[in-house]
Length: 257
Ligand SMILES: Nc1ncnc2c1ncn2[C@@H]1O[C@H](COP(=O)(O)OP(=O)(O)OP(=O)(O)O)[C@@H](O)[C@H]1O
Image 1: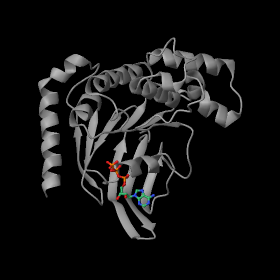
Image 2: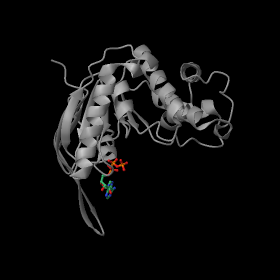
Image 3: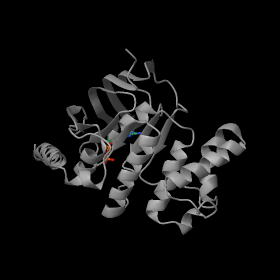
Image 4: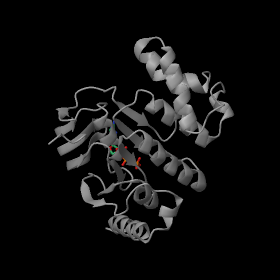
């Protein structure tokens, strides 16, 4: 059987700072299959972003293992794209050049095919005609789309998304979520998506991992009982409502505990 795209095995993470030690994660084990969409929910400070940094190779595990496609993660990898809460675009570079930035950074120059690919990706995220604009001329949602196109440029197998839509208004957020699903239907990806929204997790993901408070560990791992494709109609699905309300109860119980 092929190795899962991502595997955590008894992972523990302790940070040592001048003010002492923080145990961020304890005994975390879970897997993500190739092309699966996993959403992670959990209280603030439970180690969600730390999990993404471990997968991306930006952090070394204190104990236990993190594997990507069957191999331990030892350094930052090119085949992993990351989308952050804020897109952190270069203000002086055009939209197109922002998308091309990782390729330019890696190889020092841009091939004509890469420029074409950047334009294709910008069209895919709904930004055709905005290629030569500067980031300041775009709305927050449009800037976040540029960040998504940039993360997709190298065609990564794995896409890590850290609360990518949290700065957007509710309607834009929902539209962006379904746009994302359309993009993944065209270009399948393994996705780990952090969110604080139970309904967003239920609507977008194949599975939802709920974490305990710090030190974070896996409280429960729930499959979403709704097929694909999904769209605005899915938001009205009874199974999505039931799952969202179950997830909300779980998180509220943890907060009260
Ligand atoms: N580099 C670091 N040095 C010291 N402590 C850290 C470091 N990175 C994270 N932590 C601590 O580890 C814990 C988990 O942080 P993390 O950012 O992963 O949580 P989170 O679940 O993503 O939080 P939020 O939902 O608020 O974004 C927190 O207590 C944080 O203070």
